[in-house]
Length: 327
Ligand SMILES: Nc1ncnc2c1ncn2[C@@H]1O[C@H](COP(=O)(O)OP(=O)(O)O)[C@@H](O)[C@H]1O
Ligand SMILES: [Mg+2]
Image (cartoon, rainbow, N blue to C red; front, side):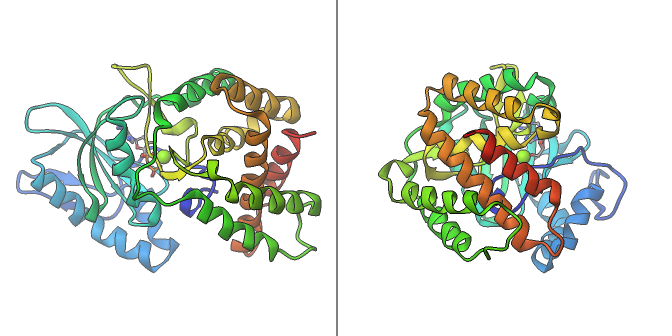
């Protein structure tokens, strides 16, 4: 259910299988094999197909230009391939090459701005190719913690990464205006409670006009799998889809990821995560609640409008979360 602009960001992730297509080899005999799941991204459309076709050459070019040696099995996210490498001084790093969409355009700027404080350190970037050399972190992510403990970790990281936005970043308010306009066009008969749709239109309109909707560098897609274990700090953030926004926007992905774990106590489970994060981050609860409702209704709208057969489970999740934070 991950989408472009991660719209709400859900990053379904998996480790890369080594068998597959897209083989390429270098002078020293090293073979890079595109993970099957990355090769399969070609089915998403012509632009993805073109990117997947180019990917082996991009990876080969970066390895050559940055004097890197492959050092392990490639993994991937929803829209990237990540290859463990060694730099020529022997240090461990990863080469990340992302699909060239708006979301990945400013990733390197956010990472550079953070300078390794609370986030993975950016070692080099080639924005044109959407390639980045990053310090290598561990495989472990926040999925391995109890969800409430993970919420505390993430809320603690907010204070480190929510610094003044860079001028190049896209304003969250612009996206919210656009998505609120789309929400207005949703037919009254759509398979989501009208009350929630109306509420999200009203809240989104107010939030987008509020000066506090912008000015802060926000991650945009901060969920359990985008926080990796590290040596120099226990946990570090990866994979920003940065915008100039409002810190309170960040909470929703921590509620809808690992949602199925809350079966049988959805309302209590969602509320416990929400209040843990609001308290630990020192957020305004009403403002955080408003963003959760808005984000969940945008997510429901994309499910309804972008799929021939909307996923009923995803819709139910969106509605359950939007209700749970306010009932
Ligand atoms: N610095 C890193 N060190 C080790 N593994 C990484 C690093 N960055 C990313 N990965 C691995 O690659 C996966 C995808 O990377 P991510 O930046 O989340 O890309 P996406 O935007 O596609 O979700 C991560 O889930 C993780 O397994
Ligand atoms: Mg990710």
